[in-house]
Length: 462
Ligand code: GLY
Ligand code: MN
Ligand code: MN
Image (tube, rainbow, N blue to C red; front, side, top):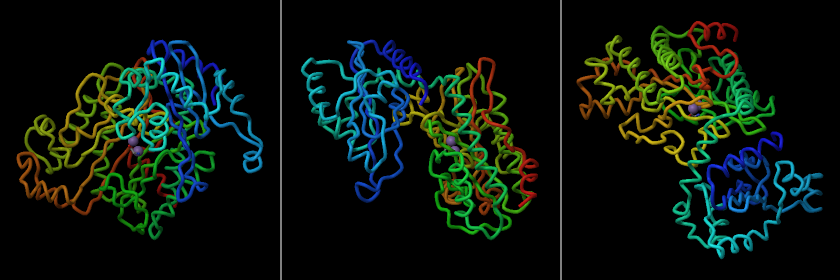
């Protein structure tokens, strides 16, 4: 937990933006795997964590803006709990540690919610993503649980997003800690992966690095020789000479902040000529983004400029043809790069995605639904304090290539005969985490290998 004053300041700021109403912020409950007492690792709701800091299941935070009062509802530990869990600080004391004076037993939440309803108070809810939370709030406030997301407050979403999108110095330090653990995970994988190993053996080793730093993973690790499948979670293949692997993995610190990094490297000691060639283009895309990101530019513009680097590079390699600007405008390049350039990062790996991708990443302008662009999560103008990922990719997705060729899609721009020579290539992605500063941008974390030479240098030693 941060110091008490951090949470007090965050809530004060939220109250100032919201001005009126009662903000209801439920924390997460335990989530059973197969029976009630065998749960997944507990992960607190990130908005609850941001405003109340308590990493404990089944709490509800309330900020009564009208009366300037704050409450935590929860079930305090009993002697029975202490027998099973060891001595616990009482929730009423923990609440005080985050500056909340009023702790009330959860059993009284229904009485409190009925009172709010009687008083016809403006109730401010965020979108919810867990069934048990929706049911609990629906029952307490007499709402239809199947329509819960009709009762959410746009005003509250906007206020939370505006506040959380700007990371404080303290948060940046925490994220950087997560990024550095993430970096160690990637370096470990690059040091140990070799022909004959199973993908899951490498995953075990890199996730052990997170554990070594008392961190967890920030999302399900992707480590695959079939990187053309963007979110491939299968880890059962045997690594072989000549393979290129995609590793997309991140750490989540005890404070809940996340890292998110992708590297692509050869299982042989060196890249093959063809792998090196495509990897070089990938890094040109990454470096284009690095050179452009600064306050005031929109991320959509950065994404499109990166796409032009890709299209130009593919044209140089005879895989594309025609007018590069037009090809990108029409979306032909997305055959190689069907996802967005990045997303916000913080207490969630896709920060605040539960509040709506467009609310977080788009602000006032509309999302383009063109293939490729529709997967761009961050498009808005960049501001100092934003932390986000840059993650270009180049993939040869056989089924996509086959279908588009069959449909004669973009034949003005795509040389299918040449593209088909890469059907066995797989895919590559490279991802780093950045902070927008007053002057420009800074990549978070210690130096990470990026060029093919830097990667081959590391691969010398296995
Ligand atoms: N880890 C998933 C992503 O990079 O967005
Ligand atoms: Mn990632
Ligand atoms: Mn990412």
